[in-house]
Image 1 (cartoon, rainbow, N blue to C red):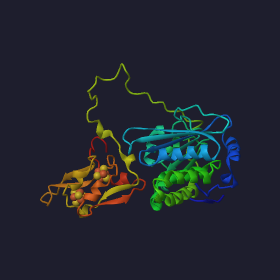
Image 2 (cartoon, protein in one colour):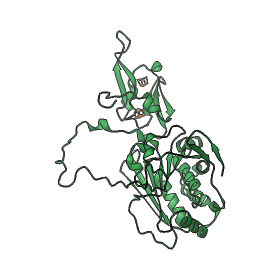
Image 3 (cartoon, helix red, strand yellow):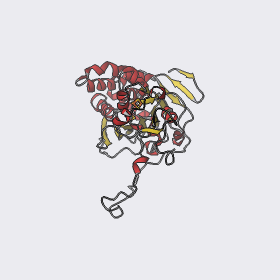
Image 4 (cartoon, rainbow, N blue to C red):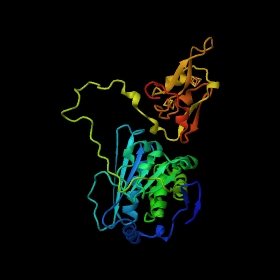
Length: 360
Ligand code: SF4
Ligand code: SF4
């Protein structure tokens, strides 16, 4: 294992591939028991948005555990009807072959949480329930650690991997990278068996993706950072069991919108999957074609200069509402809007608020 000093508070760690990673079923189970907890299952929660492949990743992991590593396993996901852009949680339980898994409830107190999109860190429920000796893996480029992560247990292991960046370079998906990182972080997970399962998942329908997924997976297992001194909380984090705001007796009468205009409070940032439109106002002719195709009312307009050529001018994008579909970029006749890789904080820096008096 290679370790070298990096930026303060960050240790770069090479892949902990030992002989353990290549062993077969029986030995895996003994390592699971010794590395984790003999009295309970290994429980994992994948926090994602639709389109990033968390469900497929959970399925590959559980399938590899059951069919290739001689473990018991269970997997399911919860998501809305929107498919892309909505919150997705995928749950995996693994245990030794002699202990059936009869629990199909969501994983509330995970041993590991994997976050597929850094914007999800703003939601406290993303961190909920992590055990004090748990592992928290999140997808983000190198840079400052988000303040929200101070809420993690002090004793938890925090791992960062630039899954989106690697996936884009390898023409793969973040799920392949994050599966690799999971294997790197947990030696009882058999790297070769999980890679086999990943390959099998895509070989039938998308054989062209196998090579790029393999590269992304291997880079995910090798290119992660263990961050030191991130969490401040003591002990296990409490599980989140949010109560609905209204129940059978208290909900408003059907058809009544008790808070009109509430869409202004939406935040669709998590729907962007690594790319965002960026406006170069020097090239803009304020034709409005981008606004015609934008499905989410993201473009902020203002009055043109006194005596100037344009009465109304495009000022910029309110990225709070932008889901990164890039239709505006495709329709812009002058190249004023371009497709850029989203780096940490870029959207916040460039954002032009649509409702500055309400949400600055
Ligand atoms: S389509 Fe392009 S040129 Fe037209 S208003 Fe939008 S950014 Fe400006
Ligand atoms: S990428 Fe462009 S068209 Fe799509 S939501 Fe964002 S601003 Fe609107």
